[in-house]
Image (cartoon, rainbow, N blue to C red; front, side, top):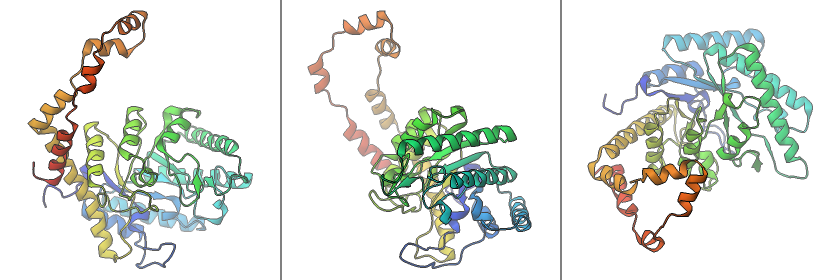
Length: 388
């Protein structure tokens, strides 16, 4: 065991669909057997994970009978108890079955929207039975390939209507669930509604109980669109809406790759970990990724361990950055404030407006002053590369 060995105290979680991914893609059949939920719980516990998350049908097939459902759930609950593992988050698959080919909550067909609500209520029942306190919504088919077919204004209203219905259901049942909305710009639809974390944050404020709803941003989803994931997470944190997070890696402009955390932009990974640690994010560090298609089962466990170790390695580098005297001194210089002036800008008053109007700013001198960001960025790079 070394300093980077995961333990349950790190609160690392994986979805059943992550280690269970058989390596199938649009151009090729599965390359490895699907690992069962019970076996996954056992192996992840041995690696030091905190828990597992699930879609309803990751555990219970969509066409299972009531008796089959009860047997599967009982076996899974026993595995959780045997290995001291938890289910912090649950969600529902509203994208895989053909009934959802034109969306779930935004489908043009009322029967589809009704079935989606029915399926989600049952998934919430299952999640709560397993101990989940967060329920994620990813609208995988909520979108369009042709705008001639769907009214996007009406689709927005249907999305709000369904979320409000489910808010009511959770309250009526007395469930300890909060909602986390997950954005994605494209794939599997050509265009997906609410494609970024910012879109989701705007939607939340129009819901029946905004306090109950936050976001679940994913590295790959924002990066696919060429956006800075760190900035999206920071906005969610500042708004008090970071209820859950999906960690993985992604190349800009590619399909949803779901690479091992840290496999790609390690510098971006560093600043993401720094953001979560500096602001004391208390939720799960959830890995929504899967092993490369080249791997057999042992490669799957190498992948899982790698996600957790990389987070812990970056966590240590964050501590080094924050403790480095040259870096802290430079940051103090760069971020030196002016309490009196900042107080004037913090809130409008006639006196503050008059004071700002009368303020003499040496525009030329301030504009000519260097910010020393080059040096700071190099120091950060040296910390990441391990020479500081």
